[in-house]
Amino acid sequence: MSSELDLGWEDVLHRAKRRVPRRRLVLAAVVAVAALGGGPAVAVLLTQPPGPHLPKAADRSNIAVILEPKTGKIVLEAAPWKGHDGICYLILQREDGCATWSPHGAYFDGGTPGGYTFDSRVRSVTAQLPHGKSIRLTLHRFDRLRVTFFTSTRFHAGVQGYILRGAHGEVLSRTRLPGPRKP
Image 1 (tube, rainbow, N blue to C red):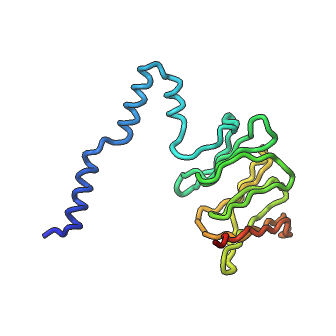
Image 2: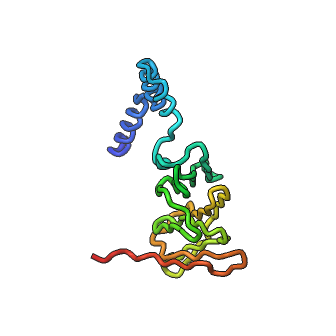
Image 3: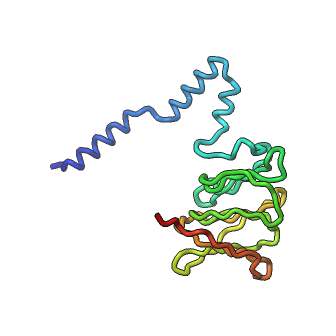
């Protein structure tokens, strides 16, 4: 005897089997666009990954990418900023933007621990979490872009601050983030 939940689940599975796979729909769209003389548009469609990507101001001929080894997901994309002395970036498929280079400029994310710094002396970054916890972040140095990104693939709500340290453990910068706003 099947319960109402089992019957509902069977219906979901049955409907899923009848759906046209997404690849077939994409292929059909590509063929239709190509038939209408949109060859260059097809190339753009095929080269753009789904979801967020680098800002349009990025020099796409010179992109640096970091992948998460276990999953193969993109952790970070960075490229020079066209027409500026700076970078464009996409961190963890969430945060993107472009920034002008400055010797000690930096960006610190208050959600998933991460950000970047232009300070070439930075050798380690620690995120300060609620209740006195802290985690050491992974550094990604791009010498040709003159920037160091720091990331964590684990989400930790409520980052309270960051400590950037030099080669001998000396504190180069201590940053406190503003807390949540009270209504």
